[in-house]
Structures are given as C-alpha cells and as structure tokens.
Image (cartoon, rainbow, N blue to C red; front, side):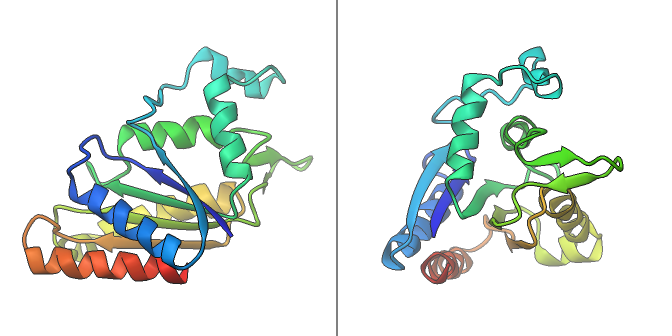
Length: 192
C-alpha cells in the first residue's frame, strides 16, 4: 500500500519531526511505499481563496491543490502527523484539508441533497502530539471532540471508514515517555 504522510510542524528539530522519522523508518522496514509532504517545507498556502471556489462552478482548480489531490488519489492511506494547537489541527493542516478535500474530489452532492464520500477506499491515521496530559484530554471531552471532528471530515464527508487517531500526550514532560512514544510510532509504521 502506498502511504501519503502529511507532516505539519515548522521546526525540523521538534519532537514531531522525530515522530515523523520513526514512523517513516517503520514504514520502510515494513516494506511500505510512502511519500512525505511537509507542509511548511513546501510553503503550502492554507488560505482558501476565490480561485478555490472554482470547484463549485466547474472551473479549474489551483495547481498546488491539483498536485496535492494527485498525491492523495495515488495513496491507499493518509497519515497526518502534527501537534495539537488550540485543541485542533494547526492552521496550515486545516487549510490543506479545506483546499484539497474539495467538492468533486473528496465528496460530491447527491440528487437527494446529501453527500457522497469519494475517498471510501482510503485509510486514515492521525498522530498528534500534545502539551496537555491524557487525563486533561479525556476528562474534559477534548479528545472526544477532536475525534468527532475527525469523523465528520474523514468519514461523514469523505466516506473513509477506517480512521484512527493516536494521541501522544504531554510530550514535553519526560524523556522516557518520548522514547516509548517513538518506539510505538515505529511499530505503527511497520505494521501499517
């Protein structure tokens, strides 16, 4: 299976980058083909502009969106690696979703006024790092809310049934915990 890894962190020395490297090593050792899209490195523009509205009128999509759609179409699975900022995706990743998962590519309107997901055959894995501890995310309902957004985007809109979200909690607190997290993401990549 070909895997598209969409990576989102501006610092190449971040723990998220270490997560990316370990996950990619696991994919490699598991003999999976993959491609990494580093949204900051490519300077992806997350702003949904008037050119992006052409999707609703049958016009031509912007080149950067078409490139990302081609990568997405050619992958059997999508993996998103990112830090949680303000209880959600970083803006650049949310903008990637806004622009790439367009009408006619990720979903389409049905004759009855509903939506049909067009990415049904895909698999999605989200790996997100947090500053907050697990108890904070679980007891406050933040984790459930974030998973609800995942379901709304990937399952309800795009038709993807196989969606998993892995949280790596409080990554700044303990070197031993970070080491265990890196071992776990390596295993995730290898068995993917």
